[in-house]
Figure 1 (cartoon, rainbow, N blue to C red):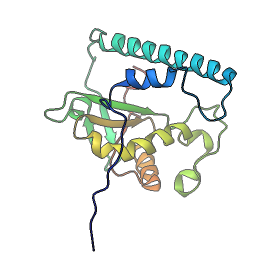
Figure 2: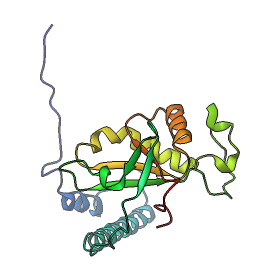
Figure 3: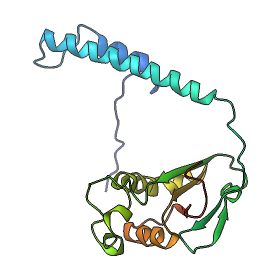
Length: 193
């Protein structure tokens, strides 16, 4: 069996050279097949709006990074692990060598006025709707589940919910969540604070 080298083509320049791409996109001499001048004008206006949005996003991100340190915690919150019910202190969420902690605050139970469908099956579906998890939060944690293994190399990650550790653990099993640290805050003031 003969192996041949496959060659690929790329636009000349650094992959991060967005200026070159923008120049290409805004070049008035380049048109998509069949596009009208009205479409090109509207498209160029959209591209300019997108450029302004990126600039504003970068400005807001810089402001966020420049925030001074927040207030000192009044105490070392004690959570309950959904994995085994053990107590976990806030200070224990920091692994050695990792000073960044990301906590996703999951609404479980959901907002009481949320009329969306509940869990599709399992023990969680048997709970009254107001005691079930938020569908949007579930979607976000589904996404975090896939990324958690990779994120763990750089940051500390936990998902916190007001429900009991048993309910949270059961729901995690029903969803197939195995990579995320799930904690109950039912017996502390973390959510309120």
